[in-house]
Amino acid sequence: MKRILVIDESEVIRETLALILGREFIVSKRSLGTGELPFVEASAEPIDLLILGVAPHFGAEAGNLVRLAAQLPFAVLFLVDTKSTARAITAHGQITCLIKPFNPHELHERVGELLARRAGSTQLRAFVHDEKPRDLSRYIAYPYVSRSTASLVQRFSATHLPLLVFGEMGCGQERVARGIRALQVKPGFPAYLNAADVSADYLAQKRVEISAQRMINGAAPTLLVENLDKSLPTSQSLLLDFLEEQEEKVGPLRYLTTANGDLLERVYRGEFLETLYYKLATLTLKLLPLRQRCEDIPALAGWFAGRYAAMLSVSAPEFSPQAVSQMMNYLWFGNLNEMETVIARTLAVCGGGRIEASDLVFDFRGDAQGASLGAFSPAVESDTAMNPQFDQPRLQVYTGPISANSSANGHGKMLDVSVLIHEIAHELKNPMVTIKTFAQLLGDRYEDENFRARFQEIVGADIERMDDLLEVMIEFADFSRPKRTKISLGERLRTAAIDLHHEAAKRQTRFVWTGDGAGHDISADESHLGYILKNLFLAALSEAKMGSEIEIDSARAGVVTLAYLREGARVSSITHYLGGAWGEPHAGILPLRILLAKQLVERNGGSLAIDQSDPEKDHMRLEFPIGEHGKET
Image (cartoon, rainbow, N blue to C red; front, side, top):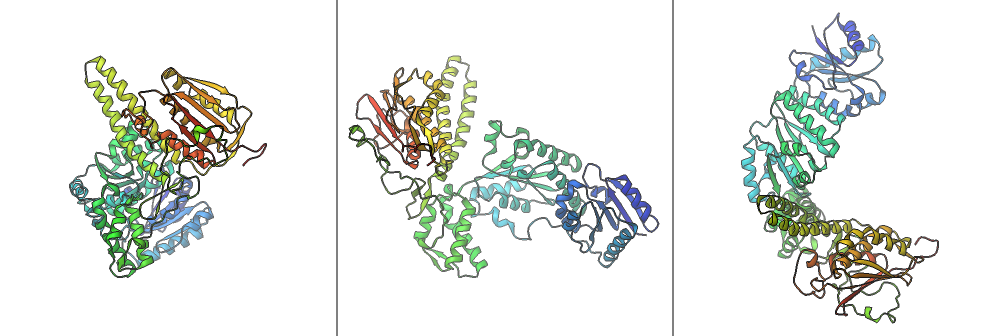
């Protein structure tokens, strides 16, 4: 006699089915419980048919349920509540569905069809969740990973300890993790979790998948947790509870986790759950960005080219020395993923054979519009006759024809300056965390209280300054093209000064108004203007003599002048902001705050000039287009 297992959250449904089918079949009944299908328990006794009531919270995952059911060693009849769910369950092989409410005739018909199909096909199909079978070992060997990383992979693969594979975007974390799993002895079946999607419903579906796989494979899984860096704070506790729950059910699990960036930094900042991090990162494997693997680039290019030449059926490619040089001198913002794309695109466009530097097909889409990084030539008409000191400012930057959002890479291509700033800032972030931690620990190790206080005072101030500048760089890089509107310049000036009252007090410096521009409107992007004024004021406060005054003159429409006594010990360069003390200003170098503010001023159609010809006093002159009365521009 055929055996049927009924699983449904409704006792009425379970009893009704048992009454209808009980004369012809041996019927067992189970509750759906908390939403996890008891596949493992069900496998204790052989069954021919599973009748499964799909709860409403599983409706959105009907497609996944069908995929799982297709691999089970018995037929499956889904009981669904809606026609939309039924449409998602395509009847085939040993799977079909029945919409509630149903009648006994429909039930007998579906059950008979499924058992007849099962009688004609009793072969058990293996559950396949991973990609098509392929050789994953190439992703854990040189040149895809560096030689030192390949050596570490061999050692880590021999252990069952949790491993976190991390690096910058595009370094191949997922491929390396799957390659490591393939290298492990008896790794168990793979169970994938996308940390970016974690929610109560998502984890409920994963319980279903893991239960089904355990029944089919008869082993504990290796959990591959991807995109851990994208896990929201609200979902990190859910994920931790889920992992601990799975360990209670199946015993110790193997964890392979991937992330973009260093999560330990976020743990230190209190942005990532410490318990979850240390649970998944007993071992860590950092994948280096390509700019730190310059010597591997020729081998990598050949490796990718060989694979795609075979795929595209083109002749074996050969890179000219100039092409190799160009690839070695490019920053590869997308790392391995970007290189693979460039090589594939190049072969698709140019075919095989000899590849010259001009044949490499990069994809730069930086906004080429905007003001230039040129000298301080005014972008709007200004009254230079009345202010001759601003005709030829002493400090200038590169005057070549480079756009505001681009810079030459030496090969006729253009690099996105915003991307470059992001890259530099994030590169500095990791060492900054290390420095902060070291400073905190070092100060605690000394018994000399005076030393500790002095150490924290000096080092803490430098760390705070560097950290602040990193945020300035990142904020600048995130600005989009200006949306200019009519803004009251006088109001924004006074708001900026009030916001910096605390900073001025620390320097014992006062803002003094020598002209009132309250009635003057300018044309500018409001968020850009706030950034500009804040950073120009902070730069002036940093440069001004302790206890002096910063004069703000906004009497002329659209024009602001800042004047202040220069601190003799200060230097007018970026080295000051980074803690440098080289003694004398360096001509041709602007303080970072001023340089970035100048960029935004020029993008808004204005100009910024600096005069240091006076041996004691500095002047900054900021000019914007006049806003039209009552109109947006």
